[in-house]
Image (tube, rainbow, N blue to C red; front, side, top):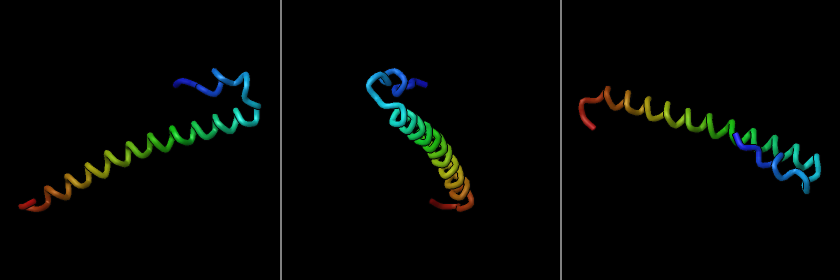
Length: 55
């Protein structure tokens, strides 16, 4: 994955760069989990719908 912090790090203090990198990693992790959660919520809703004869 593209590392924007390292590419532009010449003008960013090390502590700031490190923190930005940590934040970016956390965001990526949460986005992956969110996508997975959305998939499984949809899967569960479709299964629940199949339990009814209507709707």
